[in-house]
Length: 370
Image (cartoon, rainbow, N blue to C red; front, side, top):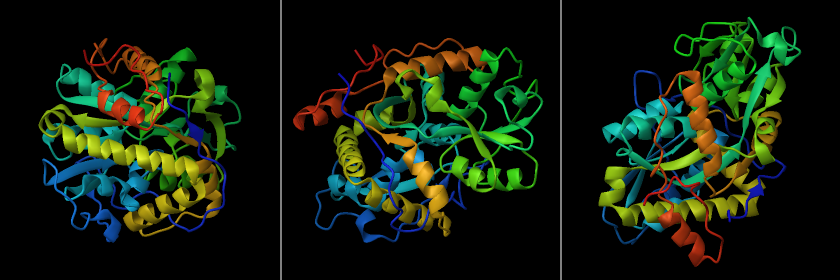
C-alpha cells in the first residue's frame, strides 16, 4: 500500500524568489556548484561524521525538485548527516545529471524517470538504483494562443522540451506518436518541430518568437504563461489517477555499496523534508523560493510562483507503475531498446524509515532488487 500523499496546496507566497538558475548546467558541463551561504546547509555543529566525509547531491532548479531545494535550504538533510558535509550541484535536465553520476561528480541525484531508466539500462543494471520518490505532476504544455488554440494546431509548430531524452522530451514524443504524427526522435524534425532548449533560455526564445510553445516542468511553464502563453494540456490529465512520477531519488550503486549509512541519512532527511512541505506548504514554498533566489539572484513574482507550486505533489512514493509506462514510451520513441528494469528500485532503506514512523511501505511494481 503506498504511503499517504498530500497535494501541495494553494497559498500565499511568503517571500519572493524563484526563477530558473542563471548558472544552470549547459550541454558542455555536468552542472553548477550551488553556493549556499546559509549556515543551516553546512556541517551540523558537533555532528558525528558518517562513513564518508561528503555526499555530493545533484538536483534541478525546478519546483519539481522541491524536496532537494527545501531539504538543503532548511538543513533538514544536513541534520541527518551530522558531520558528513552536503555538496550540491544543479543541472538543467536529466541526461547531464546521469553523466555526472557515472563520472562520480555526484553520488545522489533528484531526477526524472526517463534518464533514470536510460542510465540503468546503459549500465546493464550496475550504475544506479532508485531509492525513493520525490514528486508527481508539475509538467504542462503551454503555447502561443495566437498561433495554437487546439491540440491539433501543434502540427507544423516549434515546441520546446528541455533536452533530448529527458522526461518531458520522452513524454512529448510519446504524445506526438499517439496523435499519429511522425517525428524523428534524434533530430526533432517531423510533423512537429521538437526544439531541445535549456529551461533557462526557453522563456527568452519564446518571447523572441523562436518557439510556439513548450512541454516543460514548473516553474518554466508558469514563466511562459506570465509572458502570454496559455496552458493547453496538463500532463497529469494523461495519467490514471492523475499521478505520475516526475522526480525520483537515485544513487550511484558504487556509493550505495560503500556508504549505506550516508544514503539512509539522506533518505531520512528527504522523508522529513517531504513531511514538512506537506504539513506547511506556504512556508515550504517560501523556503524553495529563497533557495532558488540564491541560485539565480532573481525572484519569481507571485503570479508565477503560486500556480507552479500548486500543480506539484510531493511524495515519498516512487509511483513505480508509472515508471514502467514511461520506459515503454522511451522504447516507442526510438530512444531506448526494450530495457530490463528488474532491480532498478532498492526501496528497502526507505521502507525501513517509513515503517519506523508507522507509515505504510511503498511498492516497487515488481522492479525491486532481489
